[in-house]
Length: 450
Image (cartoon, rainbow, N blue to C red):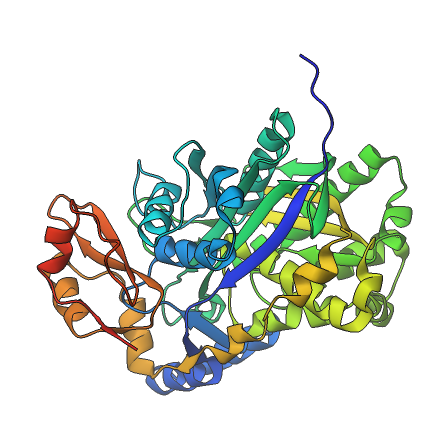
């Protein structure tokens, strides 16, 4: 069977981050008061990472609800034909909630119960490889769309994660939470992806891991940074060889760079290594090279969000596109981009993209700044409750009774005695609740809507 080549790419992006935020100077102050020996280490961690704020989930939120929230924002205004053409629903995460059931299945159910006509005739699965899960999901969906005999089909790829580390450690300043939803199509409106020349590098290392049963990740900070640098160069060289360009030519010809961002300063340090080695640029020249390409204005907002693992590179992507469109307007079309996705443990993928003709219209419709408007300053006691992790079933149900949920919010409505997680949608009109679920939902008080 002959398969026609298709242009696959991203047609739209939507981001969801929790509203609760903690300023890291508050965290450092509190930790230093209880343990003065930590003060110097935490101050240094802030300088090294460049982080300023972290966002963390409210008690009713988890990776599944965040994924549904990002997806709902992306799909809610699309017509029935567009939704009917959805063929793949895939989640990339390292924050899985069940050893068997994928987050994508929970998301599909939540979206359907919220009134979206999501079809059942689709593939649904979850990909886990540290922070590279979303990119591996994207490549999987892209490949399947490319093989399909129907050009109108689309795929939904969602990155969703909660970055959670042990308290009273330097890693604590690199926590965060959020979700990014990507709509993949043939003849995309936003970004055309070159899936044929991806550069790759994978190795068996222990720079970062989360053992089964642990709610917090283990990280070897400096070692993990070194692995990132080494894998970036190896994957980039593989990409350059596949496109038939010298490394220096590929770097010079690239208009925008987007990298995985576990903390604000990580991509800059990696680009500094790469540009010094292959373009012989010193530190100041690297800054000028990157600043000319809008690099810093793209990555800076992540200092106010925190690490969202598999979604961090795609947050960077949306942030940079938003800023470059403000600066260039329609001249953004045709610009050449290089993306680098890293997953600890480890793997690195470097691939090229081109800004599509429809990008100005897509970006013009975004309200990127709402991410920073829709926020509330949490007190330290709320943050500490979040760090303690999940509650038992009975405690959670009692806590939920007095919660005030924002309208159009997905939430964990309960955990059954057998451990199964149940989700609902806090809509103004609740007649969408199916007969099968109604007896369960109506036994507990409906959360107050704001």
